Length: 195
Image (tube, rainbow, N blue to C red; front, side, top):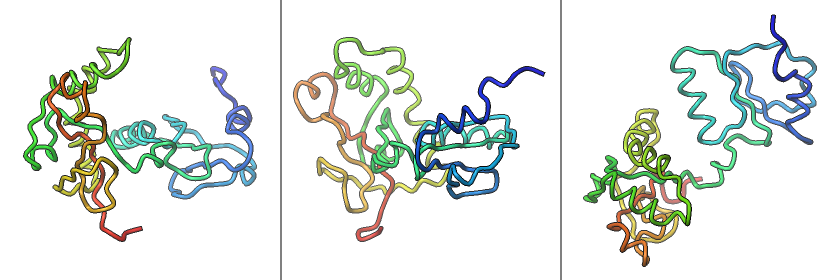
């Protein structure tokens, strides 16, 4: 039997001081690090963190029937994604863009991101992100993330129920010369006054 890459004590010590969240199988609440007396669980996939990327990986592993253990070092789940207001920068012709009457394509999105990414943009990653953006949005909708087919011209995260807005500098020069301006900020729908 091979030696584990990281022993449980090293893992728990690496979670940092204070309270660490730990999602155990069948549990949907955080467990304090001080409450963990032993570690005798095994899993096929260990996901460290609970931000957007981590949760996406955990969801896909579970959909394939693979046991997943997700751990989070912060006292609440969501990582830095929980602080973003739920905004996803998506484009290339998402269903929400089309419903709002906005025409966007992979090349338009690529020109905008690549043209506004500084001196050394990672072009292959940008290309792939743009190519898969609409499918990524469809995946979130299929998982039950609610989006309202409403657009706002406000240049900030709307407090209304609009789900599409200009979240970057698409309308500003020189970005508007690099690519045709299209709203790409996708935020789950919310009700005015909702918590």
